[in-house]
Length: 229
Image (cartoon, rainbow, N blue to C red; front, side, top):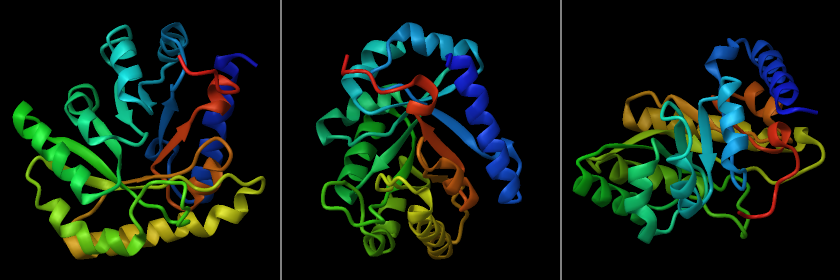
């Protein structure tokens, strides 16, 4: 199927899931995962109305962002090394993959040098997978105030990467746990957190039903993942 057809199908799935959860489709942001996608494909996606793109590697993003329309917004969604924080702060509008207090501190320092404020999401390893990055749920609560005190950081919510499963219903409890954790964070901070970034190509409908506000879609838009650029 063409990118246009894939996009229509994804948007319909988002609309259907939003209806189930009693929300408007406009409440859910579609982030196109452009990892390994060449610039012409990204530009085609932009021509179809997509404006939010996610990259996993800073080096790849640096090459591509300048060749794409300036109206596009870019989120860092992969693991960020502390020595890449300066570039990440320069190129991205949000870093979704903040997985430690030390990384948040490095981002804050980079922002200070650039006189910039960075929107972040705290990545939570809800499934406690040893192969994935992210806070343990209890760590988020324990370190929340310290991260929130960093003056160049704005916490906008939480993010998780669920395990891959054939039946997305099996990861529904993980999405529900992240939603509940966000509520606990809001209570601790005394302020709302607008975003839950959860759900990818295999499970985004269930994620939306459980409260996702950002879904990160790659394969369902662009087809099977290409080799690294």
